[in-house]
Image 1: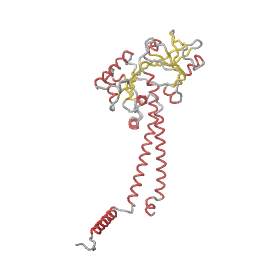
Image 2: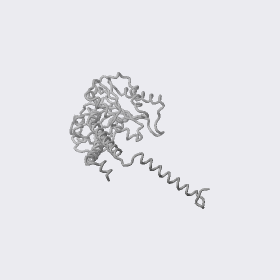
Image 3: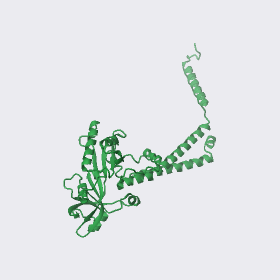
Image 4: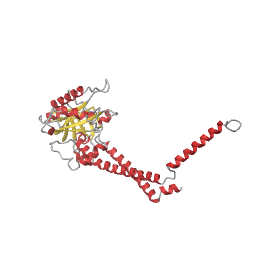
Length: 362
């Protein structure tokens, strides 16, 4: 009891209570950070594809000066395959694809139904875009970016209601200019302050890249290419993609989405505070990248605070252990003497057992 009183003084008990409260705050802080990072489907697409963590999802954002086209995307995809072949990287099994990729461009178009015309922000997409950008479908389904017939359209819920007064309009016709398109699905567009700031606050439609280019008179440069591919070691996928791009470095930016919300990467943002948001490459990021960057800025303080809380808890535990050691009632010499006594008793018993029946040694 005296030992406990020496270690756990009133002051120390108060510090233990504070430490416990800080530990709870640390876990709350950690949960908030993890919860926010999980809201971004694009950033965690590699986790959905491969739970083992052997793949990475990367985005390449092009400036207007690059003027990337579908032929550029085909060349880039081919070059990545060549890079993987050179490194002898194969698919995980005979039934799996080694990589998936997609691309997108952004523009403004008019969509017309029998009774209404709406101006919308349009994403012209190709390849496996929707595999990396799952939408909250209210009705219908995605169209395939590789289809020969490029005449499908997906509308957000607001646009569907304004055009037809319903969300169940799969199969209905709409016109983009004089070209007929068929509604393949209606999705619920995410809303909220961060979405508004990121640019996801307008009536939106998804069409094929071919349709967008036609609607904009051929002036629809691709501004985003995305690929989900093997990443056996850190930095491997990014190097393969960078080597596959034949543009000057001031005309594109590569972002590895997988792992971007890990605390080690978020801490690096602290060192880049003030300059991180500067962009000298004339690149306009799509809303999902703006969302991710905004969340990085939001989560980074949580990570910094979490680390400080963790350091505080560890420091208090070390102090407590030091006090327990300093005020211990048993010392090494006591242990040594105790063991020696036990050893001597053991030897004495052994000698007693070896005595002859007469009670005396011969």
